[in-house]
Length: 452
Length: 156
Image (cartoon, rainbow over all chains, first blue to last red; front, side):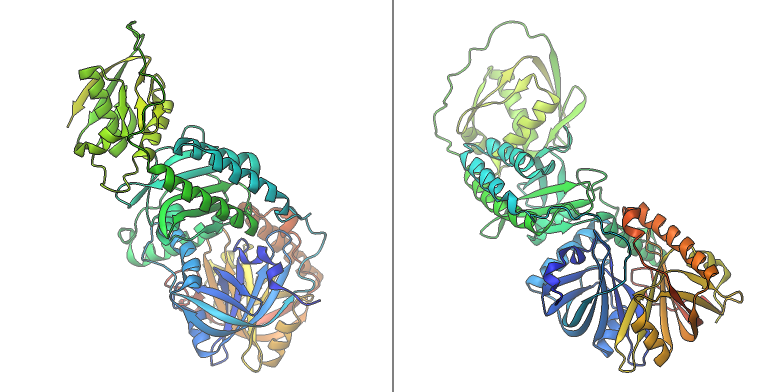
C-alpha cells in the first residue's frame, strides 16, 4: 500500500520532534532534530531554518536529506528521502511557518534573536513506514470520526451567533457555544485597543474571574504573534517549542550575557496548558480580535478544529465589526429608573491615579486607560449632577476620554468595564437600556479621590 | 580524540541518541539508536543499532564507515554530536542487552517528564541489536541556537 503523507497529520504537528540527516560534500554525515517539518502536498514538505547551521551548510553543498517523523500517539516511525528544491523567504508558506517561530521567540524573550530565515522546500523522493520501529500494541486511536460528527455542532454555533442582538450577547454566546457544542472549556476573546498596539481580553471562559482586562502586546507571545501575523497558530505539546526557545536562550545568554535578552512572557491562560489554538478574527484583512482556545491535552486540536474555528471566527469577526458600530440616536428602550432615596448600606471608595490612568476600588485595581476614564467620568457626573442615564454619543463627543475619531471600540470598552465591575464591584452596574444608552445602577454609596 | 571525562555521564544518562550515516552517493540516512557505551580510554564509543530498523545504516557503515552520533537531553535539548569512523560491527551481547534495557528505561523516564506516557515510549524496539564501534574524531556543540555546529574542545 502506498504511504500517503496526508494520512499522517500527527507526524507534522511538531508534537514529537522529527530527525533530520544531511551530508557534506566531503561525505561527513550530520544528524540533528528538525524544529518543524511542514506538509505541503504529497510531493513536497518544508523544513524551517532559523540559523545557518551545519544542516543548512550541508544542504547548500548536497541537496539530499533524510527525515524521520514520528506519530505522536502511536510512536510509529516514518522515513522520508528528500531533495532540496528551493527556499522561500516570503509568501503564504513562509508566513504560516514564521508565526509559530515568532510566537516562541517572542514568548521566550528573544524577538530578533531567532526567527524564521527561510522555509526550505524539498521534493519527497520516497516515503515509507519504518517497519519494526515499535513493538507492542498501539494505544487506541481517539476521535475516529475526525470531527465529522461535529458538523451539526458547527451549525448550532453559527445559528446561535446569528441570534445575538448586542456585542455583549455575541461574546457570551460565542464562548458559551464553543464550550457547550465543541467542548472547548478554556477560551478567551481579545480585541485590539485604540492604539492597535495591544489586545485586551474582553471575555474568557474556563478561567474563573481572572483574565478579563489583561493585555497582550501585538507581536509578543502566542496571541500577539497571531495578531501581528494575522495567521492561525496551532501548537501541541507547547513544552517542546518552549524547550527549543529556552535552549536557544541559554546559548545566547552564554555567548552574549543576560542583558541581550528580553524577559520571558507569561503564557496567557492555563499555567499547565499543553495545546494552544489561536485564530485571528479578520474583516477584509483588518484585525478585529483574536480567539484563543487551549487544553491540558498534548494534542487536543486537530485539522478539523482549525477548520471549524475558522468558520466560526469569520462569522464572529463580521458580527463584532457590525455590532461595534452602534446607533447613538436610538431611544432608550427602558424608562429612566427612579433612584430610591434610601440610605445605601455600603460606601465604596474609588481612587483614580491620573498619571497611571488607573482606577482602584477600595484599594484594589479595577480598570485602566479608556474604560477607566469613561468610568471616572460617569462617577463624577453622578456625584455632581446625580445623573444615572448616559449615552454612547456623549462619551464619543467628550474629547477628554481620548477615543479615536473612527473605530473607537467604545462598545467593547464598555463591555470590559461592565465585566470588571461584575467581578470587583458588583454593587455598581452599567446595564444597557437600549442601543447606545446605559444606566448607572447603585446598591452602594461611593467616594471619589483623584490623585496625580 | 579523547572524550572529556565530565561528558561521559551526560552521554550515558539516557539522552536521545541519533545516528547519521551516508551512502556512496552521499545520500544521508538517519536512525534512532538505543543505548551507548563509552570506551574505557574515552577514544571511542559503542552505539547500539536495532536490527529491525538498522539495515540502511549498517549498509552505509559497511560501505564507508563515516558516522555522526548526536546526544540530546530531552528536558532542555542540551546536546553534542560526535563524528568519527566505524571500526567494527558485531551482534550485541546479553550483557549489552541489559545495558540497552537500562538505557531505554532512563530515556522513557526523561520522556515521561516532558509528557510522553511510558506505554507509548516503551514501544521503542531495540533488541536484537548490532553493536557499532566508533572511533571518535571530533565533537560539536548541538544545543539549538547560534552556536550549534561549533567544534568543541571535547577531546584532546
